Image (cartoon, rainbow, N blue to C red; front, side):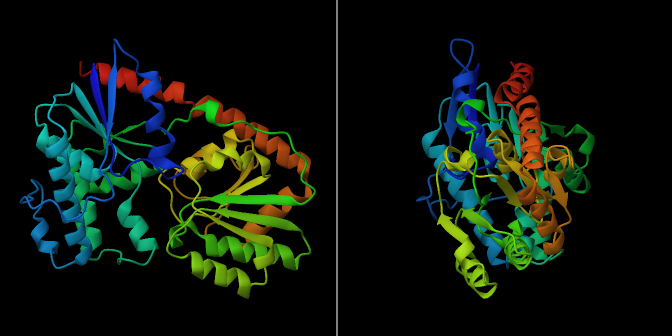
Length: 373
């Protein structure tokens, strides 16, 4: 069976699609399986010029928005690149971004196209202050889901909460299936260690949606309570300077290390003690599963896929979003009680191995793919 895993940009960032798709190829071996990956190089800009039309809504109603114009041009670019580079037929295409799913069905109308929606672009834009809820861009982006339902042969999400999120925007939400992201355990090697000072770590893109301003305020509260720690922030993004300035103004800059973008954070995450990310929204939150496999104690917010991965007090701690005091209290429990911290870490690691192993996801995918043979 000849498969195409169709991504948007090349997988480079920690978490999400990058955590799973590049590692699938080793599990889909010839002669029974042939798998290729395809993505749009970041250098491709403003190449496409083809007319774009959707079946379920008229995008021209939203064309005055620069965000919508950029989305449509990206669609054209991906369409141009796909037609330029892909000619051979496939038995099945699995797309991992809305633009990709729509383009693949346009270029290969007779080929089954399965669509995995890993995150909500419109929610991220709202939380990052780029667009307004229920505004022009929000309505355009949520209309894309019904177009995907119309064109693609099957739709998947990575968590039940995100499936619930999609339900109002499609006609048949009951047809959406859940396949969580899977992780290759060989990438994660827990390391026994005993840090004298608690080492906190977070890994994410530095954008408002990740709630790092709340994390810094919580760390300032920890310092006010007389607790010692080091906070490691791995990742880069448009608000890095703002976060560095906030750390300075809160008096915790000396306790905070900004690493910038790092390609394989899982290689040194095992040396830390506590993973914390107070996201304002997460479709799944792949980085939590990665942290669990590194055997770190986890603290997250009660949102989206995070609350599906963490059972409070069993394999991690959950706190309300937008609450730095509650976050500080949760972190304090783990800083002061290494035995409890280790208990949560072991439980989290065991659960992640059981529920999010790559082998388990590969088994699910193969069963689905064979339905279209």
